[in-house]
Image (cartoon, rainbow, N blue to C red):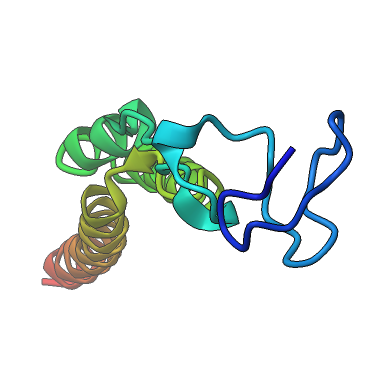
Length: 119
């Protein structure tokens, strides 16, 4: 079998050219070079945990934080097949701000009710 790349005569059952290492098993329409095979594309999806974390961050900060962290981790580990990192980060930030405001609110109420009972 002649190599389509360099013309070297190879064994009839050879997988690669003995001279230039061109893949001889690739159909001629695909080209003779090793990198000529088109890349496979995978369909992406948005992380349900990131969406849930973002929504929950407005109603229950601790659950929003947990779900957003899980969603962010899922996006990072997927290698690009799962999107939603921005939603997860927004859910984390909103959840943390909600918890901080909640603590400030509780401290303010406790302080005000403590002072009111002294008068």
